[in-house]
Image (cartoon, rainbow, N blue to C red; front, top):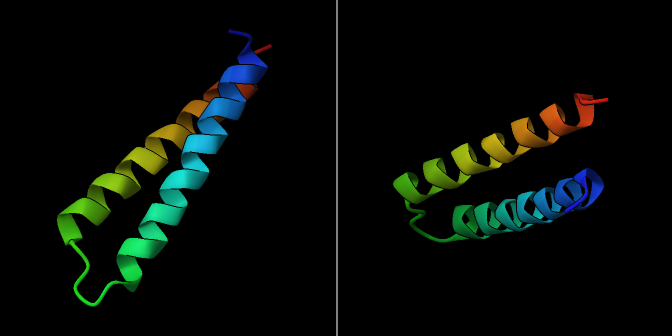
Length: 56
């Protein structure tokens, strides 16, 4: 898999997590543990994208 393809895959996962977080927050009683896990995963993905984009 080319680096650009991997970055695009990560961006797609990041966007899906963003949507999932928005849905969870809008629920009457959001699951705080689930939200924290999704936010951590979203941050890990963001860091991975940034690392891949820095490479020559």
